[in-house]
Image (tube, rainbow, N blue to C red; front, side, top):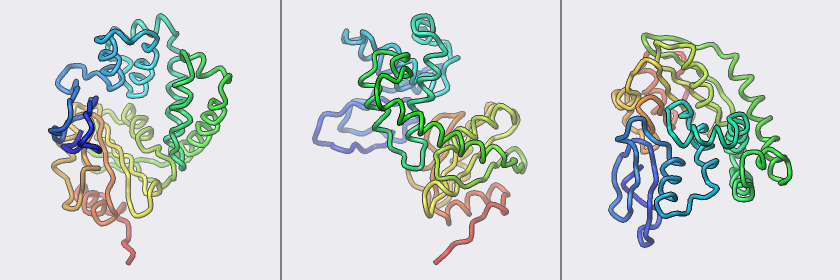
Length: 264
């Protein structure tokens, strides 16, 4: 959450569970960052809808957001209810499917939104009765193939940081970081993608060892980093850095082999 809103002349409500970097004056902010566990944005939105009596039929959407944000096991009562009502397998498959388009090289998430607006539950998302499902399945195949390649990259470890450095047009660095997080339990895992956007390195940082990732990244913030750097959660953050700033950042961590030559 930043201190700016896109359309300051229009009344704005911001629902966000990430660490705030500012509070905009021209908006009402609904945040659960101070709660433990931190509710996801989808859960916050659902609770808001409940408060005004307009949440009928929306529980499954909250659950998909909880699963997509990897908070399924945080003990939220709404997730327990959603599992019983819709089935956890259907919810997990639907979450995986609707997340796929934004991770592709095209990064077009509109088919996922259109499908969620049409469907009345996770089984309808998966049924194929709506044309968008086929588009999402193709996107999932693209992401799966990209993941297969990135999973073959072995981590390099310096101190308490593990780096997985690869190049892919797909937004798979958060998935790679999460997968290695469960295997490298004593390390801060940084999955970095040099192929997602030309002239930039996008990376995801995860930790299983109770390290505050936000604090860790703040301590290694390169001088040219902007608001795309170091946001998120204490255990899950990341950013996007231009090549010069990436080189400064990764060199400060001791990974000189991941420095990228700058071109004029």
